[in-house]
Length: 483
Ligand SMILES: NC(=O)C1=CN([C@@H]2O[C@H](COP(=O)(O)OP(=O)(O)OC[C@H]3O[C@@H](n4cnc5c(N)ncnc54)[C@H](O)[C@@H]3O)[C@@H](O)[C@H]2O)C=CC1
Ligand SMILES: O=C(O)CCC(=O)C(=O)O
Image (cartoon, rainbow, N blue to C red):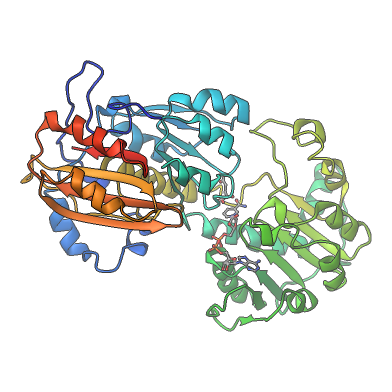
């Protein structure tokens, strides 16, 4: 359990025992251009001009002495994101690679904020050890590497960047379609090895060919537009009905898509339903001489079945960016022994195949995407740490209150993350009853509920009791008070 006055209570007593309240303005953060903020605005939220007018006098809440906040950023998070966190006075430690479970359990103990990309596995075991953790930032789209439910049950919010790298993935896929159709990477590798091999057999234009997109979300729909621009005919399969871009057509079943497409490209999330979504049966249904591209998650394709489909020339080529197991960082070898034992038994097979493009999970790795993700996720982290706003969180109800202003010096913001059981509001309001509750919002998501209340006439010495009384409620998951 987090200690009073340490992380959880916002307002907290500093190490020397005095309350720390930082009332300085922070317009840089508040004026973030993050697209997520507008996309996720709850109904009835303010217009942009109203927001800007309010932001001009918004009081910057701080949970406690900001230097006390420890941030651990793994997997080479972009400098833009590091700077936003450092500007807040947080102590930021960065690492280029990911950490294994045991190393992470040791490292995460006193960390309040962790930033990761796609490799670091934040399992229930890691989260159990993360006693001080209040928030996780996934500096990527996918959040499958985090046990989202366990995080919510520990009162830890999780944020990601829903679409800042979508365009980069779509462009990589387009490049791969052309490279596969022309066997470009083989020709290049041959010439690098000194062999001139001018061939046209088995090389094609992509114009007029059919692209089958599985998963027509942010990436799939971008790709659809780009592919039509090159004269391809686009069909797509998704579990929900979705509006087509251009003249693309949604098909009813995956089988129909597999039987019609010259190129099949996967853009679905990692879910139990998408595990080995493409296996022996699906390869059998694909057209002879067709191509497969997987830039989604390694679990979606059965790799031994892919190897078979390539060896029997059922497929004319494939491009793979993601794997069931991936090395921890750059420089690591891509072979069985460097991956988790037994999980990379297919690496040698993959490396031996022709017209198979292997990339090291770089779908979202462009300067544009990484810099935008850095700003977006770090801004969401700061807003959560300093203001308690969960807008954009992927595992908590989305709750936000208009900012407190410098006209409200004696106000405090109470955040109470609790079990979603009857009677909690009444008990919380009893605790707050000596104060005027200026505004309050509460919402639930599954078993976890999130309550935010701005209360007035709060004298600093009262905060400790308020915090303790809320902590004593049986429904409590986590209490924070921002001042
Ligand atoms: N290679 C890389 O570096 C990157 C990989 N990704 C991966 O790509 C995935 C897709 O990204 P977005 O397009 O942004 O996600 P999205 O959430 O916008 O779209 C995913 C689509 O897949 C559909 N879907 C879900 N389950 C399905 C199923 N069983 N069959 C068919 N369709 C299904 C959804 O309805 C949705 O329309 C991410 O979840 C992530 O894992 C994302 C960014 C970079
Ligand atoms: O850039 C990364 O580390 C991961 C990209 C990715 O797979 C994602 O955004 O889901």
